[in-house]
Image (cartoon, rainbow, N blue to C red; front, side):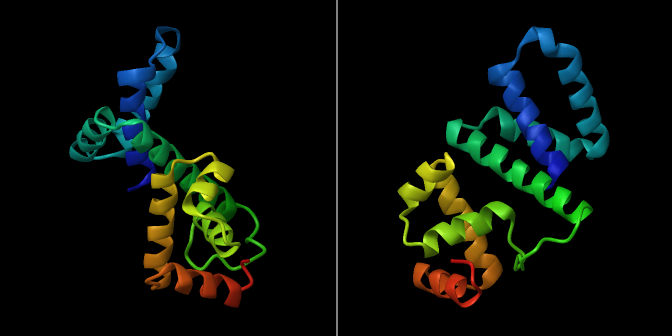
Length: 147
C-alpha cells in the first residue's frame, strides 16, 4: 500500500475515532492533499478500510506509514551505512531482535507494538528474503551481521 493510500486510511481513522473539531482546517487540508494524490477509487477504498480498522489495525497502519516515511528520508539523504536487503528499517529491527533470541511477545514489548504487527513485519521480511522459518531468518541475520 502506497504512502498516500495509507495516509487516506489514517485520515479516515481520525475522522471516525480521534477527530478534534479544533483541528478541522488542518484535517481538511490533509484530506484534500491525499484525495488529489490518489485516483478517487483508491481514496474511497482507503477511506472505507480506515473506518473499519480495529486498534491493532490502526497501530499496524501507523507503523507501516512511519517505516515508509523513514525509508524515504533515508533515500533522500545519505545512503544507509549498512545493507538493507530490501527490508524496511522496522523489518530489520524486528529481524535483529528475533536473531537475538527474543520471542514475538518480547519484540512487541521492546518496540511498543502489538504481537500482530511484529508478526506482520516478520512475514514481510521472510517473503522479501525468500525465507520460510524462524531458523532460516536467524541464520540469515547471523550470516549478514545483523545480530
